[in-house]
Image 1 (tube, rainbow, N blue to C red):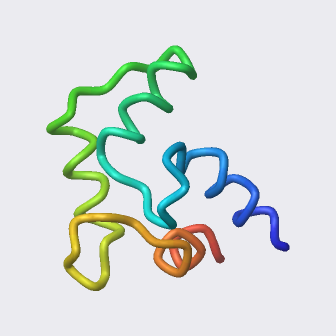
Image 2: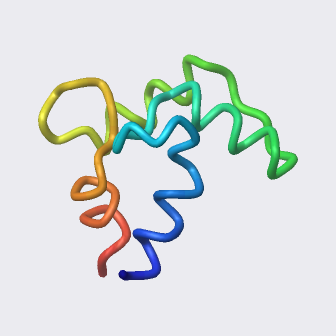
Image 3: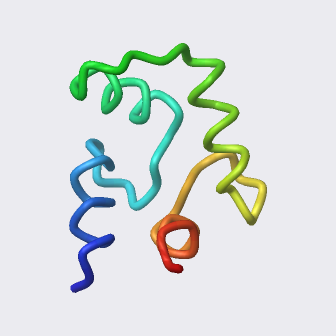
Length: 66
């Protein structure tokens, strides 16, 4: 299991294998850097390669890999 898989699993609170904008909002609030739902949706859209409106592990890993 890679480091980004561990991180992904921490963010994916509902354990559905995808990160939603709502989960990003919750993460950022927990980190003390709140963002709006609209900002989180824009972030998801940037990483979402298959157009489903969510970030899966492959998309997350592609973003984090150099």
